[in-house]
Each structure stands twice: as C-alpha cells, then as structure tokens.
Image (cartoon, rainbow, N blue to C red; front, side, top):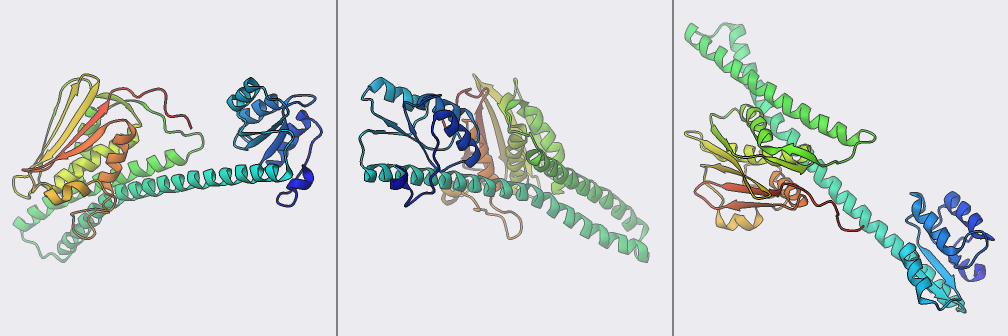
Length: 354
C-alpha cells in the first residue's frame, strides 16, 4: 500500500487504530486509509472518533475489508466511511480510489468556499447599502446647513429669512441625526457579526413594531414631506434574525418614500395575520413598476433610481432574507407600487442535511 500511494502522496503509517487516530489528529491528512479489522480499535470505531472531532470530521476515509458482509458495509457508510475497497485489490485500484476521494474533497471545499464568498459579497453589499443611503442624506443636509450658516455669519439674511432659515436648519439637523442613528445601527450589526461567539440566531421578533420604528427612523432621514400611514392588526411576531428582517422593512419603506411624488406623497404600511402567516404590505402612490421591470425588480444591481442614488441591492437583499425564512416577496403593479411580504410565523426546526 505504501509503495502504491507514495508516487502521488506523502504517506505516513500507523500500526493500529489508536495510533492512527493520534496521527490523524496531529497531521490532518487529506485521506485516511484504514483496515476494518485492527487491534486496539477497529475501523468503525476509528471512523466514529474521527467524525466526532471538528479537526478530522471532513477527512475522507477509505476502508479496506476482506469481509463480504453487507451489514458491515452499511454500518460503515452510516458511521461515515466514504468508500470501501475489498481485498484482494490491485495497486492501481487503490491509487484510483484514493485520488478520486481526495479530488472529491477538494471539489467540495471549492464549492463551499465559493458559496461563502458569494454570501460575503451579498452581506458586504447590503451593509454598504445600509450605510450609503443615510450617508447621502447626511451629506446633503450638512451641505445645506453650511450654506445657511455662511449667510448667517455674513449677516445677509432679513428677519423673515432668518426665521425660515432657523426652521430649515432645525429640520436638517433632525435629518442628520436620523442618518447618524441608521449608520450607527448598521455598524453595531457589523460588530455583532464579527464578535467572537456571535451566531445568527433566530428568535421571536415583532415585525409590526419594527415597522413602526423604521418609519420613525427612515422618514426623517429622507427629508421628504411624504405622509406615511400605518395599520397593523393581530400579533406580528415571527421567528427570524431580527437585524436581517429589519433590513427588509427599511429597504421597502425607503424605496416607497423615495418613489412617492413630492406633492401629496403617500405611503401605506399594513400588517395582518393569515393563519400561521404574517403579511406586511408597503404601498406608495408613485409611478409604480413598469411591466418590463417586473421580471428584473429583485435582480442584483438593477435599479430605476438615478446615478448615485442606489446600488440596486436593497430589493435583492430583502428578497433573499424573506426566501431564507420560507416566505415570499412579490410586487404588484400600479397605480403605485405595492410590495407584499409573507412569512411563516414559525421556522421548521429541521433543515436540509449538510
């Protein structure tokens, strides 16, 4: 076996199962080849212990056996054996199996890495989106305050203009403060995800109360004279990651406020319960979504806003969060745009086996 494998692998060997377990924990090999029958602990017990350890649970195991017993093979597969090789076997057969298992492990690692990088890209884009929008409001407010302050310093304002400027500056300061609160909340979320021991834990969250809080936070930050009406009925508690679902609410609400007209702008936020499903709708009286945009509305980086006003990720993030909860997010055509969120009140305890 050593001779067959050493042309393609660095090979280390152990005389029994216990020594093999010790060496596997120390060396973290790419593949473990073990006999089913060994002194100390047999191949099945070795497999159980390897699979119980975080350091070795991912290592593929090729089991050698002289037994033709089907029950032993099935038990081995249930324990975590990746493949069997029956004695006697040829060196070529051993090498082919070993290379196939190592390649399969490498392919799996690449897939996992790609998925994690894709998730990281979406999360980073979402956080950037959450910071960029209030930051723009903050910059615009401060630019206007600077102009007003300069006029005050130079004494160019009449008494009537002075009163109007003072009122406008108070409003701009409220906008700036609201933007700072949103940015601070996003930074806190980033800190939570990076903090040691933090995990994405689903817990009961009142999404109706979250919507009320979002209105109080988002509307001042936009600086727009849009009327927002809210109507909630029933218990809006769902199992979710609150910080993530709050992004759904704030993204839908901000889009609706920005889509509403400057004069007589109106946004209606409704929440109600249908059996074990919580429903929330956000509707504006803006121009609505054109038919040709319906199929692309949740596509990453698609936006109908002007340059510098959005990254085209808000609705994508909202859609993904709702999908992860087993819910749906749909848009209804005009007049105006209406987004409908449906999420189950409780999450299934068992997910797909990884």
